[in-house]
Image (cartoon, rainbow, N blue to C red; front, top):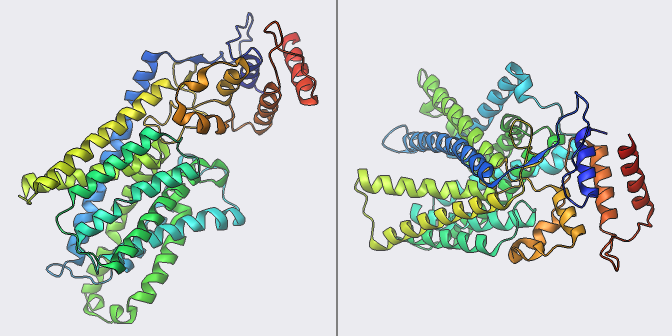
Length: 468
Protein backbone atom coordinates (compact mmCIF):
# COMPACT_ATOMS: atom_id res chain seq x y z
CA UNK A 1 0.00 0.00 0.00
CA UNK A 2 1.55 3.33 -1.04
CA UNK A 3 1.58 6.38 1.19
CA UNK A 4 -0.30 8.37 -1.44
CA UNK A 5 -3.13 5.87 -1.37
CA UNK A 6 -3.17 5.93 2.41
CA UNK A 7 -3.54 9.69 2.45
CA UNK A 8 -6.27 9.54 -0.17
CA UNK A 9 -8.22 6.89 1.73
CA UNK A 10 -7.89 8.77 4.99
CA UNK A 11 -9.21 11.89 3.30
CA UNK A 12 -12.13 9.93 1.87
CA UNK A 13 -12.99 8.40 5.22
CA UNK A 14 -12.80 11.88 6.69
CA UNK A 15 -15.67 12.99 4.47
CA UNK A 16 -13.51 14.42 1.72
CA UNK A 17 -11.69 16.90 3.98
CA UNK A 18 -7.87 16.96 4.16
CA UNK A 19 -6.22 14.97 6.97
CA UNK A 20 -3.26 16.74 8.58
CA UNK A 21 -0.51 14.38 9.66
CA UNK A 22 1.34 15.36 12.79
CA UNK A 23 4.33 13.19 12.00
CA UNK A 24 5.79 12.14 8.68
CA UNK A 25 8.69 9.90 7.91
CA UNK A 26 11.52 11.50 5.98
CA UNK A 27 10.97 9.24 2.99
CA UNK A 28 7.21 9.81 2.88
CA UNK A 29 5.92 12.09 0.11
CA UNK A 30 4.07 15.17 1.33
CA UNK A 31 0.27 15.07 1.14
CA UNK A 32 -1.30 16.43 -2.01
CA UNK A 33 -2.67 19.97 -2.13
CA UNK A 34 -5.66 21.38 -3.95
CA UNK A 35 -4.79 24.08 -6.48
CA UNK A 36 -6.15 27.56 -5.99
CA UNK A 37 -7.98 29.44 -8.73
CA UNK A 38 -4.86 31.45 -9.58
CA UNK A 39 -2.78 28.26 -9.83
CA UNK A 40 -5.35 26.63 -12.11
CA UNK A 41 -5.30 29.67 -14.38
CA UNK A 42 -1.51 29.54 -14.63
CA UNK A 43 -1.59 25.81 -15.37
CA UNK A 44 -4.26 26.32 -18.03
CA UNK A 45 -2.25 28.97 -19.83
CA UNK A 46 0.94 26.93 -19.64
CA UNK A 47 -0.74 23.90 -21.16
CA UNK A 48 -2.62 26.05 -23.67
CA UNK A 49 0.73 27.36 -24.97
CA UNK A 50 2.12 23.83 -25.27
CA UNK A 51 -1.03 22.67 -27.05
CA UNK A 52 -0.84 25.68 -29.37
CA UNK A 53 2.70 24.66 -30.33
CA UNK A 54 1.51 21.16 -31.21
CA UNK A 55 -1.40 22.59 -33.20
CA UNK A 56 0.96 24.98 -34.96
CA UNK A 57 3.28 22.12 -35.93
CA UNK A 58 0.28 20.15 -37.17
CA UNK A 59 -0.80 23.17 -39.26
CA UNK A 60 2.71 23.44 -40.71
CA UNK A 61 3.17 19.78 -41.64
CA UNK A 62 -0.40 19.48 -42.91
CA UNK A 63 0.09 22.52 -45.16
CA UNK A 64 3.35 21.13 -46.52
CA UNK A 65 1.67 17.82 -47.23
CA UNK A 66 -1.24 19.56 -48.97
CA UNK A 67 1.17 21.47 -51.20
CA UNK A 68 2.97 18.23 -51.97
CA UNK A 69 -0.30 16.53 -52.93
CA UNK A 70 -1.12 19.37 -55.33
CA UNK A 71 2.28 18.95 -56.95
CA UNK A 72 2.17 15.15 -56.94
CA UNK A 73 -1.30 14.68 -58.44
CA UNK A 74 -1.67 17.78 -60.60
CA UNK A 75 -1.66 17.19 -64.34
CA UNK A 76 0.54 20.27 -64.70
CA UNK A 77 3.35 18.89 -62.50
CA UNK A 78 4.19 15.30 -61.56
CA UNK A 79 0.74 13.92 -62.52
CA UNK A 80 0.91 10.73 -60.44
CA UNK A 81 -2.54 9.12 -60.86
CA UNK A 82 -2.78 6.90 -57.75
CA UNK A 83 -3.33 8.84 -54.47
CA UNK A 84 -4.31 5.73 -52.51
CA UNK A 85 -1.04 4.04 -53.43
CA UNK A 86 0.89 7.13 -52.32
CA UNK A 87 -0.86 7.19 -48.94
CA UNK A 88 -0.18 3.47 -48.53
CA UNK A 89 3.53 4.13 -48.99
CA UNK A 90 3.34 6.91 -46.41
CA UNK A 91 1.93 4.49 -43.83
CA UNK A 92 4.90 2.16 -44.22
CA UNK A 93 7.34 5.07 -44.01
CA UNK A 94 5.64 6.12 -40.77
CA UNK A 95 6.02 2.58 -39.43
CA UNK A 96 9.74 2.58 -40.25
CA UNK A 97 10.28 5.95 -38.55
CA UNK A 98 8.34 4.87 -35.47
CA UNK A 99 10.41 1.68 -35.26
CA UNK A 100 13.58 3.79 -35.55
CA UNK A 101 12.53 6.02 -32.65
CA UNK A 102 11.75 2.99 -30.51
CA UNK A 103 15.17 1.50 -31.29
CA UNK A 104 17.19 4.69 -30.71
CA UNK A 105 15.30 6.04 -27.68
CA UNK A 106 13.62 3.01 -26.06
CA UNK A 107 13.19 4.74 -22.69
CA UNK A 108 11.12 7.46 -24.31
CA UNK A 109 9.28 5.74 -27.14
CA UNK A 110 9.09 2.04 -26.18
CA UNK A 111 6.46 1.54 -23.45
CA UNK A 112 6.97 -1.44 -21.12
CA UNK A 113 3.76 -3.09 -22.31
CA UNK A 114 2.72 -4.37 -25.70
CA UNK A 115 -0.73 -5.37 -27.01
CA UNK A 116 -1.73 -9.02 -26.84
CA UNK A 117 -2.94 -10.69 -30.00
CA UNK A 118 -6.53 -10.51 -28.78
CA UNK A 119 -6.31 -6.82 -27.84
CA UNK A 120 -4.56 -6.00 -31.10
CA UNK A 121 -7.29 -7.71 -33.08
CA UNK A 122 -10.14 -6.18 -31.09
CA UNK A 123 -8.83 -2.65 -30.60
CA UNK A 124 -5.91 -1.77 -32.89
CA UNK A 125 -7.09 -3.40 -36.11
CA UNK A 126 -10.56 -1.74 -36.08
CA UNK A 127 -8.85 1.62 -35.56
CA UNK A 128 -6.51 0.99 -38.48
CA UNK A 129 -9.31 -0.21 -40.77
CA UNK A 130 -11.51 2.78 -39.91
CA UNK A 131 -8.62 5.15 -40.61
CA UNK A 132 -7.87 3.56 -43.97
CA UNK A 133 -11.50 3.56 -45.02
CA UNK A 134 -11.86 7.21 -43.98
CA UNK A 135 -8.94 8.19 -46.20
CA UNK A 136 -9.91 5.88 -49.04
CA UNK A 137 -13.56 6.94 -49.23
CA UNK A 138 -12.60 10.62 -48.98
CA UNK A 139 -10.19 10.32 -51.90
CA UNK A 140 -12.71 8.37 -53.97
CA UNK A 141 -15.42 10.96 -53.41
CA UNK A 142 -13.23 13.74 -54.82
CA UNK A 143 -13.42 12.03 -58.21
CA UNK A 144 -17.15 12.74 -58.42
CA UNK A 145 -17.85 15.89 -56.37
CA UNK A 146 -16.40 19.38 -56.01
CA UNK A 147 -14.01 20.37 -53.23
CA UNK A 148 -16.55 22.81 -51.78
CA UNK A 149 -19.25 20.15 -51.58
CA UNK A 150 -16.71 17.74 -50.08
CA UNK A 151 -15.75 20.26 -47.38
CA UNK A 152 -19.38 21.01 -46.64
CA UNK A 153 -20.26 17.35 -46.03
CA UNK A 154 -16.96 16.45 -44.39
CA UNK A 155 -17.56 19.11 -41.73
CA UNK A 156 -20.28 16.80 -40.41
CA UNK A 157 -17.41 14.78 -38.92
CA UNK A 158 -17.61 17.25 -36.02
CA UNK A 159 -21.03 15.85 -35.13
CA UNK A 160 -19.83 12.26 -35.44
CA UNK A 161 -16.77 13.03 -33.31
CA UNK A 162 -18.99 14.46 -30.58
CA UNK A 163 -21.40 11.52 -30.87
CA UNK A 164 -18.67 8.91 -30.44
CA UNK A 165 -17.03 10.99 -27.68
CA UNK A 166 -20.29 10.81 -25.73
CA UNK A 167 -20.80 7.15 -26.62
CA UNK A 168 -17.35 6.10 -25.38
CA UNK A 169 -17.50 8.54 -22.43
CA UNK A 170 -14.54 10.49 -23.72
CA UNK A 171 -16.47 13.72 -23.26
CA UNK A 172 -18.99 14.69 -20.60
CA UNK A 173 -22.45 15.40 -21.95
CA UNK A 174 -23.16 19.12 -22.12
CA UNK A 175 -25.98 20.99 -23.81
CA UNK A 176 -23.70 24.00 -24.18
CA UNK A 177 -21.07 21.91 -25.92
CA UNK A 178 -23.63 20.51 -28.35
CA UNK A 179 -24.80 24.06 -29.09
CA UNK A 180 -21.25 25.25 -29.77
CA UNK A 181 -20.56 22.29 -32.10
CA UNK A 182 -23.70 22.96 -34.14
CA UNK A 183 -22.80 26.66 -34.30
CA UNK A 184 -19.40 25.79 -35.77
CA UNK A 185 -20.98 23.26 -38.12
CA UNK A 186 -23.45 25.83 -39.45
CA UNK A 187 -20.62 28.35 -39.89
CA UNK A 188 -18.65 25.85 -41.99
CA UNK A 189 -21.68 25.20 -44.19
CA UNK A 190 -22.02 28.92 -44.90
CA UNK A 191 -18.26 29.27 -45.29
CA UNK A 192 -18.11 26.89 -48.26
CA UNK A 193 -21.60 27.49 -49.65
CA UNK A 194 -20.44 28.73 -53.07
CA UNK A 195 -21.20 25.65 -55.11
CA UNK A 196 -23.00 22.53 -54.06
CA UNK A 197 -23.60 20.33 -57.08
CA UNK A 198 -25.31 17.42 -55.38
CA UNK A 199 -24.11 13.97 -56.41
CA UNK A 200 -25.70 11.16 -54.43
CA UNK A 201 -22.80 8.73 -54.80
CA UNK A 202 -20.22 11.27 -53.71
CA UNK A 203 -22.45 12.45 -50.88
CA UNK A 204 -22.75 8.93 -49.47
CA UNK A 205 -18.99 8.36 -49.76
CA UNK A 206 -18.15 11.56 -47.86
CA UNK A 207 -20.81 10.98 -45.22
CA UNK A 208 -19.48 7.46 -44.63
CA UNK A 209 -15.95 8.85 -44.39
CA UNK A 210 -17.14 11.44 -41.85
CA UNK A 211 -18.73 8.76 -39.66
CA UNK A 212 -15.62 6.60 -39.90
CA UNK A 213 -13.51 9.65 -39.06
CA UNK A 214 -15.39 10.24 -35.81
CA UNK A 215 -15.19 6.54 -34.98
CA UNK A 216 -11.47 6.18 -35.64
CA UNK A 217 -10.52 9.29 -33.65
CA UNK A 218 -12.49 7.98 -30.67
CA UNK A 219 -10.74 4.61 -30.94
CA UNK A 220 -7.37 6.35 -31.29
CA UNK A 221 -7.92 8.30 -28.09
CA UNK A 222 -8.86 5.10 -26.25
CA UNK A 223 -5.62 3.49 -27.44
CA UNK A 224 -3.55 6.49 -26.34
CA UNK A 225 -5.10 6.23 -22.87
CA UNK A 226 -4.53 2.48 -22.47
CA UNK A 227 -1.14 1.90 -20.88
CA UNK A 228 -1.64 -1.86 -20.88
CA UNK A 229 -1.83 -1.79 -24.68
CA UNK A 230 1.60 -0.14 -24.89
CA UNK A 231 0.26 2.66 -27.10
CA UNK A 232 0.35 5.48 -24.59
CA UNK A 233 2.67 7.64 -26.67
CA UNK A 234 2.16 8.77 -30.28
CA UNK A 235 5.20 6.98 -31.70
CA UNK A 236 4.13 3.67 -30.17
CA UNK A 237 0.60 4.14 -31.52
CA UNK A 238 1.92 4.74 -35.04
CA UNK A 239 4.23 1.73 -34.73
CA UNK A 240 1.35 -0.63 -34.00
CA UNK A 241 -1.28 0.95 -36.25
CA UNK A 242 0.66 1.89 -39.40
CA UNK A 243 1.21 -1.66 -40.76
CA UNK A 244 -2.49 -2.53 -40.47
CA UNK A 245 -3.45 0.81 -42.02
CA UNK A 246 -1.00 0.28 -44.88
CA UNK A 247 -2.23 -3.24 -45.58
CA UNK A 248 -5.89 -2.16 -45.51
CA UNK A 249 -5.43 0.87 -47.75
CA UNK A 250 -3.05 -1.05 -49.99
CA UNK A 251 -5.72 -3.70 -50.52
CA UNK A 252 -8.24 -1.01 -51.47
CA UNK A 253 -5.72 0.55 -53.84
CA UNK A 254 -4.91 -2.83 -55.40
CA UNK A 255 -8.61 -3.47 -56.09
CA UNK A 256 -9.44 0.00 -57.40
CA UNK A 257 -6.18 0.97 -59.09
CA UNK A 258 -4.37 -0.75 -61.92
CA UNK A 259 -1.02 -1.58 -60.35
CA UNK A 260 0.19 -3.48 -63.41
CA UNK A 261 -0.15 -0.31 -65.49
CA UNK A 262 1.52 1.72 -62.74
CA UNK A 263 4.71 -0.32 -62.58
CA UNK A 264 5.01 -0.49 -66.36
CA UNK A 265 4.41 3.24 -66.82
CA UNK A 266 7.05 5.93 -67.41
CA UNK A 267 7.20 6.54 -63.63
CA UNK A 268 9.31 3.41 -63.26
CA UNK A 269 11.56 3.70 -66.31
CA UNK A 270 15.27 4.52 -66.06
CA UNK A 271 16.30 7.42 -63.83
CA UNK A 272 12.64 8.37 -63.42
CA UNK A 273 12.34 5.40 -61.05
CA UNK A 274 14.59 7.08 -58.47
CA UNK A 275 12.60 10.32 -58.65
CA UNK A 276 9.34 8.40 -58.29
CA UNK A 277 10.56 6.45 -55.27
CA UNK A 278 11.79 9.64 -53.57
CA UNK A 279 8.51 11.38 -54.38
CA UNK A 280 6.60 8.49 -52.82
CA UNK A 281 8.67 8.10 -49.65
CA UNK A 282 10.14 11.48 -48.66
CA UNK A 283 6.75 13.09 -47.95
CA UNK A 284 6.12 10.15 -45.64
CA UNK A 285 8.48 11.89 -43.20
CA UNK A 286 6.27 14.98 -43.28
CA UNK A 287 3.20 12.76 -42.83
CA UNK A 288 4.89 11.10 -39.84
CA UNK A 289 5.53 14.47 -38.19
CA UNK A 290 1.95 15.52 -38.90
CA UNK A 291 0.49 12.35 -37.37
CA UNK A 292 2.78 12.65 -34.33
CA UNK A 293 1.38 16.16 -33.84
CA UNK A 294 -2.19 14.91 -34.30
CA UNK A 295 -1.82 12.11 -31.77
CA UNK A 296 -0.11 14.44 -29.30
CA UNK A 297 -3.02 16.87 -29.55
CA UNK A 298 -5.52 14.04 -29.04
CA UNK A 299 -3.59 12.70 -26.07
CA UNK A 300 -3.37 16.09 -24.40
CA UNK A 301 -6.78 17.56 -25.22
CA UNK A 302 -9.10 14.93 -26.72
CA UNK A 303 -10.75 14.33 -30.06
CA UNK A 304 -13.26 17.19 -29.92
CA UNK A 305 -10.59 19.92 -29.56
CA UNK A 306 -8.61 18.14 -32.28
CA UNK A 307 -11.59 18.37 -34.61
CA UNK A 308 -12.08 22.04 -33.72
CA UNK A 309 -8.42 22.62 -34.57
CA UNK A 310 -9.08 21.07 -37.97
CA UNK A 311 -11.92 23.51 -38.58
CA UNK A 312 -9.66 26.36 -37.45
CA UNK A 313 -7.15 25.22 -40.06
CA UNK A 314 -9.82 25.40 -42.77
CA UNK A 315 -10.79 28.91 -41.66
CA UNK A 316 -7.15 29.98 -41.72
CA UNK A 317 -6.59 28.51 -45.19
CA UNK A 318 -9.68 30.20 -46.64
CA UNK A 319 -8.81 33.54 -45.03
CA UNK A 320 -5.20 33.47 -46.28
CA UNK A 321 -6.33 32.47 -49.76
CA UNK A 322 -8.72 35.40 -49.85
CA UNK A 323 -6.16 37.89 -48.50
CA UNK A 324 -3.10 36.81 -50.51
CA UNK A 325 -4.36 35.05 -53.61
CA UNK A 326 -7.50 37.13 -54.05
CA UNK A 327 -9.97 34.23 -53.85
CA UNK A 328 -13.50 35.53 -54.16
CA UNK A 329 -15.61 35.29 -51.00
CA UNK A 330 -19.30 36.06 -51.13
CA UNK A 331 -21.04 37.84 -48.23
CA UNK A 332 -22.49 34.46 -47.24
CA UNK A 333 -18.98 32.98 -47.05
CA UNK A 334 -17.76 35.87 -44.90
CA UNK A 335 -20.68 35.41 -42.50
CA UNK A 336 -19.82 31.71 -42.31
CA UNK A 337 -16.19 32.47 -41.45
CA UNK A 338 -17.32 34.90 -38.73
CA UNK A 339 -19.77 32.39 -37.22
CA UNK A 340 -17.13 29.66 -37.26
CA UNK A 341 -14.57 31.88 -35.52
CA UNK A 342 -17.15 32.81 -32.87
CA UNK A 343 -17.97 29.14 -32.35
CA UNK A 344 -14.30 28.25 -31.89
CA UNK A 345 -13.90 31.12 -29.40
CA UNK A 346 -16.96 29.94 -27.46
CA UNK A 347 -15.63 26.38 -27.40
CA UNK A 348 -12.29 27.57 -26.02
CA UNK A 349 -14.06 29.63 -23.35
CA UNK A 350 -16.27 26.65 -22.47
CA UNK A 351 -13.23 24.46 -21.88
CA UNK A 352 -11.41 27.21 -19.99
CA UNK A 353 -14.36 27.68 -17.65
CA UNK A 354 -14.72 23.95 -17.04
CA UNK A 355 -11.00 23.63 -16.27
CA UNK A 356 -11.32 26.31 -13.57
CA UNK A 357 -14.26 24.42 -12.02
CA UNK A 358 -12.28 21.18 -11.89
CA UNK A 359 -10.59 20.00 -8.71
CA UNK A 360 -6.82 19.96 -9.32
CA UNK A 361 -4.33 18.30 -7.00
CA UNK A 362 -0.71 19.48 -6.83
CA UNK A 363 2.46 17.89 -5.54
CA UNK A 364 5.00 19.60 -3.29
CA UNK A 365 6.55 21.39 -6.27
CA UNK A 366 3.25 22.82 -7.47
CA UNK A 367 2.95 20.43 -10.42
CA UNK A 368 -0.45 18.87 -11.17
CA UNK A 369 -0.85 15.22 -10.25
CA UNK A 370 -2.28 13.80 -13.43
CA UNK A 371 -4.04 10.52 -12.76
CA UNK A 372 -5.86 10.40 -16.02
CA UNK A 373 -6.62 13.54 -18.01
CA UNK A 374 -10.27 14.23 -18.39
CA UNK A 375 -10.76 13.97 -22.09
CA UNK A 376 -11.72 17.04 -23.98
CA UNK A 377 -10.21 19.49 -21.56
CA UNK A 378 -8.16 22.23 -23.13
CA UNK A 379 -5.31 21.82 -20.68
CA UNK A 380 -5.22 18.06 -20.74
CA UNK A 381 -3.19 17.73 -17.54
CA UNK A 382 -5.06 19.76 -14.97
CA UNK A 383 -8.52 18.38 -15.53
CA UNK A 384 -8.43 15.13 -13.55
CA UNK A 385 -11.58 14.47 -11.59
CA UNK A 386 -10.61 12.08 -8.85
CA UNK A 387 -13.06 9.48 -7.72
CA UNK A 388 -12.43 10.49 -4.14
CA UNK A 389 -13.78 13.96 -4.84
CA UNK A 390 -16.97 12.41 -6.14
CA UNK A 391 -17.22 10.07 -3.15
CA UNK A 392 -16.73 12.89 -0.68
CA UNK A 393 -19.53 14.90 -2.25
CA UNK A 394 -21.84 11.89 -2.25
CA UNK A 395 -21.18 11.01 1.38
CA UNK A 396 -21.59 14.60 2.57
CA UNK A 397 -24.98 14.71 0.86
CA UNK A 398 -24.19 18.17 -0.50
CA UNK A 399 -26.25 20.14 -2.97
CA UNK A 400 -23.41 20.25 -5.50
CA UNK A 401 -25.36 17.94 -7.79
CA UNK A 402 -27.28 20.97 -8.98
CA UNK A 403 -24.24 22.94 -10.08
CA UNK A 404 -24.47 21.96 -13.74
CA UNK A 405 -27.57 20.01 -14.58
CA UNK A 406 -26.59 19.17 -18.15
CA UNK A 407 -23.34 17.55 -17.08
CA UNK A 408 -24.06 16.06 -13.67
CA UNK A 409 -25.22 12.60 -14.64
CA UNK A 410 -22.31 11.92 -16.98
CA UNK A 411 -19.86 13.29 -14.44
CA UNK A 412 -21.06 11.05 -11.63
CA UNK A 413 -21.24 7.99 -13.87
CA UNK A 414 -17.60 8.41 -14.86
CA UNK A 415 -15.75 6.57 -12.11
CA UNK A 416 -12.00 7.06 -11.84
CA UNK A 417 -9.40 5.72 -9.43
CA UNK A 418 -6.73 7.81 -7.81
CA UNK A 419 -3.67 5.79 -8.72
CA UNK A 420 -4.44 3.75 -11.80
CA UNK A 421 -0.94 2.26 -11.87
CA UNK A 422 -1.56 0.62 -8.49
CA UNK A 423 -4.17 -1.98 -9.36
CA UNK A 424 -4.48 -3.40 -5.87
CA UNK A 425 -4.75 0.02 -4.29
CA UNK A 426 -7.29 1.10 -6.87
CA UNK A 427 -9.39 -1.94 -6.07
CA UNK A 428 -9.29 -1.04 -2.38
CA UNK A 429 -10.37 2.51 -3.23
CA UNK A 430 -13.29 1.17 -5.21
CA UNK A 431 -14.18 -1.05 -2.28
CA UNK A 432 -14.10 1.91 0.07
CA UNK A 433 -16.19 3.95 -2.37
CA UNK A 434 -18.82 1.20 -2.56
CA UNK A 435 -19.02 0.99 1.19
CA UNK A 436 -19.18 4.76 1.62
CA UNK A 437 -22.25 4.91 -0.58
CA UNK A 438 -24.03 2.78 2.01
CA UNK A 439 -23.69 5.39 4.74
CA UNK A 440 -26.89 7.10 5.71
CA UNK A 441 -27.42 10.16 7.86
CA UNK A 442 -28.66 9.40 11.39
CA UNK A 443 -31.21 11.34 13.37
CA UNK A 444 -28.54 13.58 14.86
CA UNK A 445 -26.85 14.18 11.54
CA UNK A 446 -24.21 11.53 12.25
CA UNK A 447 -23.51 8.58 10.00
CA UNK A 448 -25.01 5.24 10.86
CA UNK A 449 -22.75 2.24 11.55
CA UNK A 450 -21.55 0.17 8.63
CA UNK A 451 -22.79 -3.38 8.63
CA UNK A 452 -21.58 -4.83 5.30
CA UNK A 453 -18.38 -6.94 5.20
CA UNK A 454 -16.74 -4.47 2.82
CA UNK A 455 -17.60 -1.60 5.14
CA UNK A 456 -16.26 -3.39 8.19
CA UNK A 457 -13.06 -4.13 6.29
CA UNK A 458 -12.67 -0.46 5.38
CA UNK A 459 -13.12 0.47 9.05
CA UNK A 460 -10.42 -2.01 10.02
CA UNK A 461 -8.07 -0.59 7.40
CA UNK A 462 -8.66 2.91 8.66
CA UNK A 463 -8.11 1.90 12.28
CA UNK A 464 -4.92 0.00 11.45
CA UNK A 465 -3.47 2.99 9.58
CA UNK A 466 -4.30 5.39 12.36
CA UNK A 467 -2.82 3.06 14.98
CA UNK A 468 0.30 2.62 12.83
